Length: 193
Image 1 (cartoon, rainbow, N blue to C red):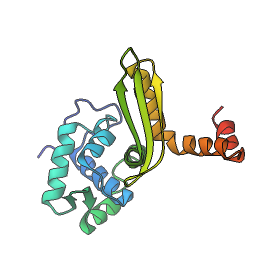
Image 2 (image 1 turned 180 degrees about the vertical axis):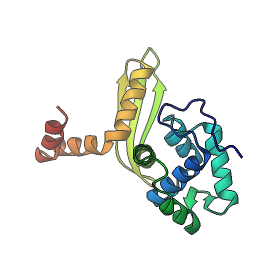
Image 3 (image 1 turned 120 degrees about the vertical axis):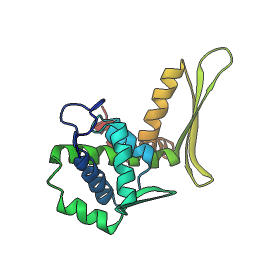
Image 4 (image 1 turned 60 degrees about the horizontal axis):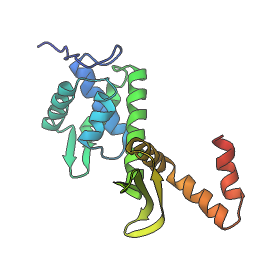
């Protein structure tokens, strides 16, 4: 059986072997130590052009069928047999590809976790512009929120993304200003200028 993978949409240095794709997926799930959704995996390995989308789907199904991974409401996670394979065959996939895929997966998981707490809503404003509502929430409790008028939708989206990434720092700076505690915002300003 030919083990050569479809390479459409895969950059130079990406995976072109079906076995390597399965090993990479097992490696990622073993290293992450937490479930990852199909969409997160797609963004991590296909969105970064490391693996062809259809090959990834086929590899996931193969791993599921062979009880190497499982899928539940939280996403995919590794089973003991899959961990063994990831460990035994870890040198088959290049360390550069593994490191890049792992870094992307961690970033995606962190961003998605932040999005659950750092929320944004963009609404058009009568007369022009867009209102960006930002909040940090813990369950149903709003810890911090503000609204800001943005000139256009793209600016609002960009600012919203920045809030998701840096909302905690913004909250700390604002708290430092209103409590007259410069130490709370000086480090942020020094590190971001």
